[in-house]
Length: 478
Image 1: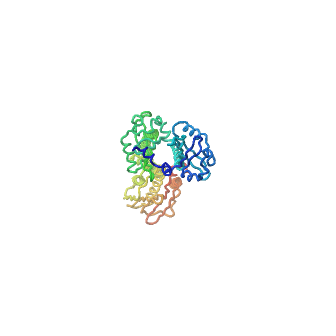
Image 2 (image 1 turned 60 degrees about the vertical axis):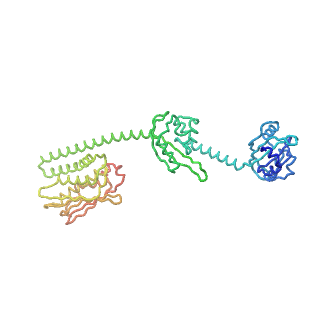
Image 3 (image 1 turned 45 degrees about the vertical axis):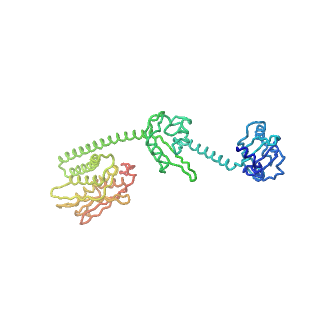
């Protein structure tokens, strides 16, 4: 016995009663001749208000639609069954609903007039979700299309689901050449980069995020490019779908500019190193000429003035000598520079019969040339004063330099264990003192002096602020 014969043996009323969908049977005038209980329950109407009435007059006329009437007339005239016809309407009792209609002609077993079976299914929730999803999809697409950088949405098999407008423009491809294709098949296989494929393949199972992954590749339509890739996985609870977001940034122009800038900077550095070397040689030559001239002078004070001049030039020359030895351009090691400077002062001022010991301690602080020049000249003046006043009639002594750094303040202490400074001596009125005061103002430093029978110490406090690089040497004359 086939299935059709089996169904014929079942009471049709039992079949209708088991249906979850609402059901109407219409005659050739589209009047209701049968309504099942589900229809009455779904729409909150009674049987008497439904039977023997035209479909278009049911409820508040929500079925009176020209499109629906035409579709049903076409089925009645022998056309194909009606499937999935949607009506979005406000119903009197149940409010807004989206109903999906299916209709087909049937002929009674007893040979009566053909009848139209119409089934109704409430798809409000499903339809609203589809519309919301469609709106969300359009918004997401709009957001993706506003991105300046190329952007792809891939599934777990690295098949392209969505691409931004900027991706099409950047790589000069069309949508039909991209959507639905595996990433490795785009173009001429230009994205079939083993390291990239392995990286993206591990995003899903390992739940990793790829950030700033750079590749250099020769692309078919745009040539060689340096691309930065960022990728992450999107996974929502209750949804087994896995999506990879892949953002691409073209770094080619930036990398080229960086290379050009580095080349220009290297060239400038070479020129500055050469300039520093020449300045050092020039200052050394000037110092030597002054020393030669001083030898021919018989006047003691004049010869002393020449020596002081040579010492000041030597202090600046020591800076450039330190720069040259360190291979630096505008920064020196503070401890090495000032130690060498102090040794130079001792060598230039050393007198017969005096055994002098140097004591240099403290931290190493990088100094810019703008700060190192005035510091060196100040240290030169202070050390020279120590020779002038501290070790008179002495056979030995100690000249020291202590460097300390605390709270962005560099503290330099130049000290000696000499006889101290005579309180009645005029040591603050000479050119050296005037230069020291001017250089202190230039670098916003303070200088304190203590002197007694056990020696003299000068404490120079220098705030280490970036503004030093902005200070003009002209401020020393302020």
